[in-house]
Length: 108
Image (cartoon, rainbow, N blue to C red; front, top):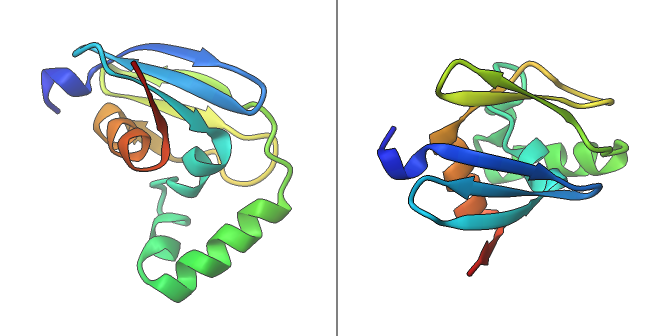
């Protein structure tokens, strides 16, 4: 993990969150995109090819995506507890940065 990947703040809204990193970059990210990036042993393999990604997205979109609880895991990541679906993935700060850059909106 580089210093720029260190998460310094998480602001949780009803449908999305704002992630702020040590290098000053900030991103708004919908919970749907965060949930689709779950790195756990159950969800990770479902993101390996185009067909499985489509099926996984459809399944997650059928779930109610309420605001998850967030728990700090050591100095390197967060665990999100979703009211429905998986809650075992640990999102490293590097993964959060990657997902935010790909699927989020940069805040200037």
